[in-house]
Amino acid sequence: MSRFSFHSIDSTGKTQRGVIEADTLRQARQIMRERGLTLVEIKQVGNSLTASKMKNKGLKTRVPSHAVSLFSRQLATLTNAALPVEAALAVIARQTEHAGLTQVLTAIRHKVVEGHSLADALADYPRIFDPMFRTLVTAGERTGQLGTVLEKMADYYEIRQQIKSKLSQAMIYPAMLTIVAILVIIILLVAVVPQIIEQFVHMKHTLPITTRILIGVSGFLERTWWLLVIGIFAAVTALKLLLRRQNNLMRFHTALLSVAVLGPLIRAINSARYARTLSILQSSGVPLLDAMKISTEGITNLRIHYLLVQAAEHVRQGSSLFAVLEQTRLFPPMMLYMIASGEQSGRLGELMAHAADNQDKLMQHRLSMALALFEPLLIVTMASIVLFIIMSILQPILQLNNLVS
Image 1: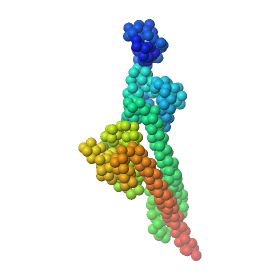
Image 2: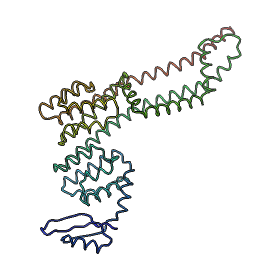
Image 3: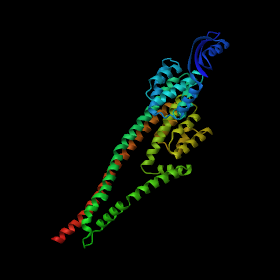
Image 4: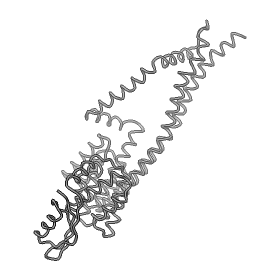
């Protein structure tokens, strides 16, 4: 059975667009006449089996967040220009460079043409369009402000992508420095030190304690390096298996929050994400309880997620947002003050957006501080290890020189 896209006029003069299924073009025209519609245009757009395959393929497609952000921006621009949604989707599908997104947008357009809302069509692809995106689209369609809502979504994705990019860039140098330092020390202990120490093994005099420790460590690594590799792999695998259980993962995430530098950074990242999501949902007309529930879905730490879910439950029972968020002890005083001001003035969405901006700046400051502490600490640690190796080698040489003298 084929699918036909039609453009028709009913008895009252209203224009109708949609998609019908029929075996042939003649049968499709007959169906339209039976409905009392005057055809302006009709054309075949595919068949039911093809549409089903496109949907199933789209369910497995992965689309990066920057592609979703660009799609949101393009759709907002075209919608604000009074272009129908199905036409806008067709234009974007032809222009996008991501093949997977092209297939998804084509399938979404087919469903919209059939008469479904855009939010319903997006719901078929939850891995690409998260609950926040779909909820905002629903709110935009109901209020007639779809373009404005999509622009907010594009801003949100761009901000999130910028923060993610800054975090990745900030971690590149420390990660490379750590890897190089570890490799240098391993090469010294396994390849260089044994050849030098071998000259002192046959000496009748007792070697210094540091040299004996170095010989023991070097010999251990040389003989059992493969056991260490297997042990590390087994430990990582065992940790992954343990963390598959929800209670173990909850304990692990709770323990992370108590780590000196890492804990405040995790709280800052998650609280900023929660505040920004909640501000966008609130300013788009989504009820507070629904907004709080959706905002928790972007939280990666299970302990923080649990506390915020409990906060939503307390708000449902009648507590104020400021009071329940203060009890979580996750948000800084300035953010809580802005939330309280927003509740009292009716500008919760706007002030929470400012609070999210401040929290992002605080998070970046804490990350910079953490890296500023980590880099010199790593350099001092590695230098100390290298100094120990050098001194362990030099001490027997000096003893030998004294004996010769």
